Image (cartoon, rainbow, N blue to C red; front, side, top):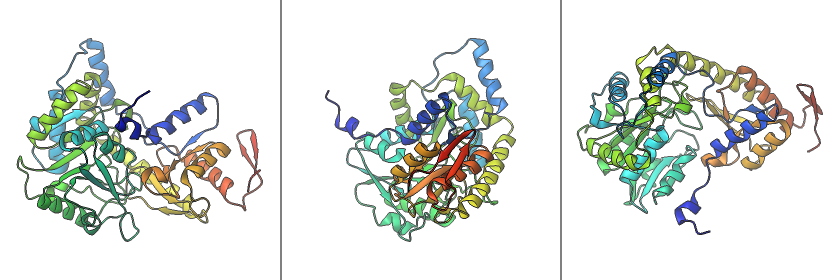
Length: 405
């Protein structure tokens, strides 16, 4: 079989594969603890459910405009004004089937083959593959100081004449790091000065902890005209716990959004009207759902950190937001894929290997689930790795015996 060069270069999504593995094991009755998940366990807001129900019961489930229904665009306009202080218009907005599609269509609209896209490492697993799907070259950059908080110097050091775009994801998946306001200011001004597109992936921007406030990229821009090269990405998946609804959006200049709309019209003809109505309901509805989720995640973060800090040999990074904790397990195993499969095989705990995010020896652990999952999951991991652990462990009525070194 002859496949395209791009097709052969693209790897499957490791996080989606893990979800599939977890579902299969659970269906078999295995006592799986999923610490690899990237979706909150709380239910979608009732306002979203009612809006979806209303359109379903009407029977008027039809094609929609490729860039989104007017009601959703109006909701996004108000959202952008409320949280970013910027007034935009419908022609500045495109609704997509998830923030992932919004980023993908944006890259297809701006990127030529062999042009480069820079993003700080660790990075979301899909960034490199999305760039490669466009024939571009992904350029991950690890902060020089060894932290997970990049500086402008780190970005400048890898910027070339081929650099077309920079992607900034803050708070960051997988580390939970919220980049400093000074860095966001620097990167906005740097991109404007160099004529580089800046894709701000703000999908987690309201899920932040310790009293921190979301950082507004527009605050530091000197050009918010139709020449602006800022592309703002957001969606309902994370903050509204609506991962399966698949609605995200992009805010950009009119010419860009028109181009993205043309591309999307040939890909999917636009998102389903049902989920667009649901997203509209969530954005326009009671926002206490977001704060309740944020508070729950902060509490889960604290519990996860307590357990990991008591785990000798493990170095976790305290997240500023999201629902992930990134931890260095290289003291026990430097091959993160080998480690992740060991934990899955021995104690049925699912984690995500750090190498998938550009960091070997690390694991991403999710705090989305119940407190019981966090505490028992770390207990199982410790039993596998810590040589001072008891020889036996009970998972339910199943007795496990350490038969490895």
